[in-house]
Image (tube, rainbow, N blue to C red):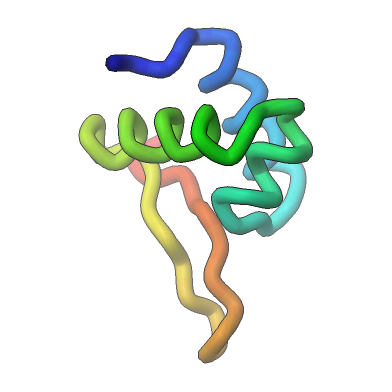
Length: 66
């Protein structure tokens, strides 16, 4: 099942504003963790989202190919 477009927009706005992991991005977007994971899965499948690893232990969602 694909995440609703509104969820995707809110999730993307959250990760564009700040470096956040999936759970924090979902919370900032007003989504449940499950909804955030659905957006994440759709983004990875579309090759638009990835995880950046700036330093060991600090990973965050990044938009790629934008």
